Image (cartoon, rainbow, N blue to C red; front, side, top):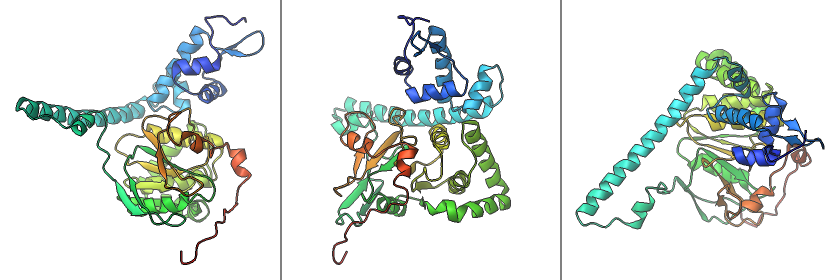
Length: 346
């Protein structure tokens, strides 16, 4: 086949559809779409391929697993109800937020009619919610006790930094000071996997939630493991709390990491935000982030942690990106400890 203006390369198709090239590759690996090839062997997306892939992207945005997408595309209604229910819950949450903004507009218009000019910050609040501190604390060593405020909290919050940057200490402080938060350390796998299975046997409601979540994850490409069981049970046992997860990718292969992130992104607004430490480019895929995600970056020189918007060109974006890598790269530093001389009296 000769590529022409009617055919798009994977990068062009990804740009047109608003997804990553990696996502297109996963759709192809799962048999959801089969793009043609040029005479040189390069993938080329025809208009039909593009339309098919657009349907896949839409279903993924509605919260369908890859297996559910395949069933819907084949004409099966299996799995539609829970996915639509979750999407309805998300839309209702958006409506509540929109209703609050409408009330604010009405108040400002009433004030204006009385001759009261609204403040710029009140007008800005119609677009962006006021960033009031959610948690405030003094930074632990290796910082110098500086005051740190957590303001811009989103549905998914990453904590990223190089080895020895203090990100784990920061995460533990977040778990202490965020309202109703819980810290899930890496020891959850070795110490908690067996306990997690015992908890599932003892709690029928927990077991039902666990099975529902794991079923979705397995359909999306994950393989059940101690790490996956410990993570899901930890999240479901603390469903009403803010989880702060140390190295969320620990023990998970890349397909499982991708499935976990797809699951977290599809959760409705009734769930609290999640904070997670990561060095994995499968967890924090910078080509797949949404406006509901943000990162806290801990610099190597122990200057103050900074909030980084996940957009190319944003302050701190390039430094954050340099800390991420695929699973095989992270395996090279497995078990390494970054030692920093601690000052006297610290």
